[in-house]
Image 1 (cartoon, rainbow, N blue to C red):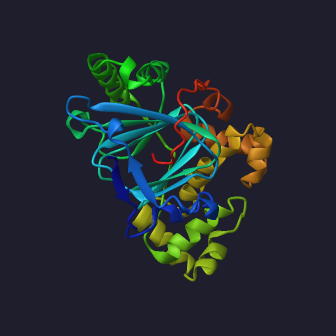
Image 2: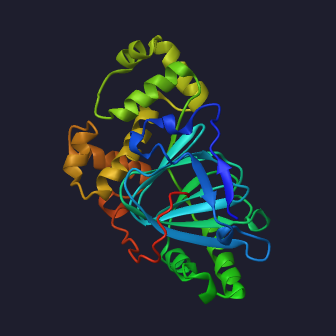
Length: 299
């Protein structure tokens, strides 16, 4: 029998991040099902499940007793926890430690490869959520383990899994996190900014919108998010750029939709953050090999 895990609400609903509207048409996905065949065990500590997911699929808040890696060789997904959200573009992956309540939203048609990792084999240093770039080696290792169970003997699966975990341990995190506050006034401001990133309001105007003084809002940004209003806005805009770029929008349109006066201004900000131009960052060729037809919505 599969394990059925309900989706309890956390202290702050992770799906309230505002990074993308949640489709009401998918409200039926209120439970999370993990078939026994995909559960990691001490003898098979790294398991993989792969399937295509349509645009708008939502998995509400849930948690696992194991860690997981969500990787989309094609498409964009959004992962949110209580105090942060990540938009994961193609050829990047997100690591989620055990017992971290999270939600998933599919921003566009995607092919999702999910690795389930038993707690006994988690490398040191992977105790926080992080987005990493999928190297050519890591991409091929994940593809090699993405075969039907009868065709993959356990010793080979263990060797591939160990190499995958070593690559993840060595991978540098990418600054794709958008931290979210707990203060209701600041959360109101942040979700509104994420919903309309091109709205170029000043801090004074945003503070009035949130029902607080600019000084209070500035203090809350520093206290709760450890960054300034300007720094947080820049991080949020970078996250919003990812799904636009994945749709093939030219940089000029992305810059315009995010409120930048010019493409060069957007590119300069992007390069300061990532150390690469937007063109270089999104040039990683995704692995578009599709395996399997499992279209269930769990992650």
